[in-house]
Image 1 (cartoon, rainbow over the protein chains, first blue to last red):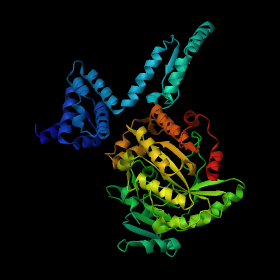
Image 2: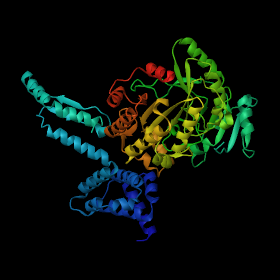
Image 3: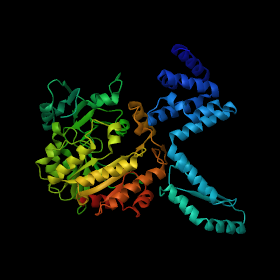
Image 4: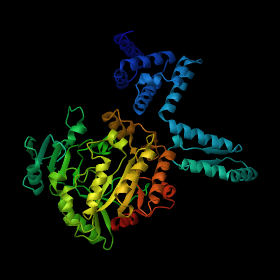
Amino acid sequence: MNVDEIDAQIRMLAAGRRLPPSHLARWLAMDPASRAAFLDIANVIRLRTGQLMTALETLEEIAVREHLTIAGVLDRAEIRRIAGGPGSAPSRASALLEALRTLRYPRLKKMEEQIRSEVSALKLPRGISVVLPKELGSDELTVSLRVRSAAELARLLEALDRSRPGLARIIDMLGGKT
Amino acid sequence: MKFDLDAVFVEHGCAGSALATRVLRALARDVPVTYVADAREATRPASGARDPFGSGKRRTVIARRKTPFLKPCHAGSPRFACCGYLVLTLASNCPMDCSYCFLQEYLADNPAFQVYANFTDSFDELDRLIDNARGRSFRVGTGELADSLAFDSITSISRDLIDFFASRENLTLELKTKTDEIENLLGLDPRGRVLVSWTLSPDAVYRSSEHLTASPAARIAAARAVLEAGYRVAFHFDPLIAYPGAERDYLLLIDELLDTVAPKQISFISMGGLRMTPRLRGAARSRFPGDPMLCGEDVLASDGRFRTFTPLRLNLYRTLAERLRKAGVEIPAYLCMEPASVHESVFGAAPSRPATIGERLARG
C-alpha cells in the first residue's frame, strides 16, 4: 500500500470507530511507517475507540520518552508477541494496553509488583485487606478489617500484629525508602 | 537585554513614569511602541497566533497595577506544609520559556509581559505589613509570576527594590531567577537583606526544557558573584524531574554547586517535584510535544495534580536531602507544595508552621 492508501484506510477506520478528530489528526501526523504500523495493529487486534485513543496517547508518550518512532515502539518484541500471538482480539487488546503501560511507566510497574508481592507474602487471613494507593499516587496505605464478632476481631488483630514488620516495610516502600 | 521583544504598549497614564522612561530608553530602535488608553486588551492572547502564549511573552505592556502587589504565595494551601513566602507582583510572565512552567496555565488568558509603572506603591504595602506585625520577619519575593531579573537590564527595578529593602530591618527580599543578569546588583549594598536565588536543574533538564535560560553553570557562577558582592544566596531544586538517571545528575549538580558556593554560605535550599494540573500538562505538551521531561512517570495525585508516583519522588527528595546533610554544615531545606507527612518522611521531623519557616528563612 502506498501512503495515500494507508491514510485512506486510517480515515475509514477512524470514521467507523468514531475516533475524535483530534486523535485522527495526531495519527495522520505520525511519520508514514508509524501511521502504517499503528493501522496494522489496530486492525489485527480490532481495537475499540477508547482503546485506540489510549494506545495512541501512550504510544506517543513512549516515543517521546525513548526517542523512538511509534513504529519503533510497535516493533518491540513484547508488542509483536501480543499482536501475533494467540487469544481473542479483546484479550490481546487488553494485553497490548497493559504492555504499553509497562513501557510508559517502567519504574511504577516494577514498584507496584514489588509491593504487591510483599503484600502477598504477608499471607493475611480473610477479613483483612490491604489496599495500595491508586498508581502509588500517595504514601497512604489502607488496611481494613471486616469482622462479625469480637472473637473474629481478636483473631484478625493478632494476625495484623504478627504482620507488623511486613506492613512497616510496605509503608517504607510507599514512602520511597528502599 | 538578552531577550527579544516584538512590541511595547504603554498605558496613557504611565507614559511619563520613571519606569516607562527607562524601558523606552533601553529598547532597540526597531521595536514599535504604542500608547493605549486601556492596556488590558494588549495583555490578551493574540487571536490567530499559532502559539498565543509564546507570542504574548514577546509583547511588553507598561500599565498601572490596580490590585494589591503583596499577597501570600498562591501555591499555599492547608494541605501543604508551606514556607510562609510572600509574593510581590511587580511584573507578570517571563521571556524565558520553560516547558513545565505553570504560567502557561496561570497566565493563559493574559500572556503579555506586564510590568507595573506604579511598582513603588508596593513599598507602602510592605511598610504597612511590618507596621502591623512588629517584631516579625518576612521573606518577600518577586519571582513568582515573573523572573525577578530577566528584564532588569531595561527596567532596573532591582535597584529600587534593593534600596528599599536595605533599609527595612524585618524584611528580606528574594530575587528568584534562572538568568545571570546580575549587573545591576553588583554595585549596591544590600546590607544583608537581599537574597538572590536560582532554580537549579541538571544539564539534561536545562537542555530539554529550560529554553532561553542561563546554563546551570552560569547560574552557579552568578551566585558566586553576588555572594561576593554582599548578597545572600539560595537555591531551588524545583521542579525536580525524576527522569532516568536523575538521581546521579542531581547529585552531581549539588557537588558542582557546593564546589563553588560553600555550604555555610547557602541561606536555604528548597525542593519540589514536578507537579502539573491536567490543564497545564495539556498546554505544556501541546507547546513542547517532543520534551521527554514532560512524559515522566507521573500519576494523578490527591491534590488533582500530576506528580511523579510517590515512592520515586520521595526517594529522590531523600537522596538529595541526605547529600545536603553530608555537606558538613546544616543547610536549611524545605519542600514546596508537599504535605507535612512528606516533610517528616524526608527530613525525619515534622515541619514548623509556615510563619516559623518563613521567619527563619527571612532571618537567615
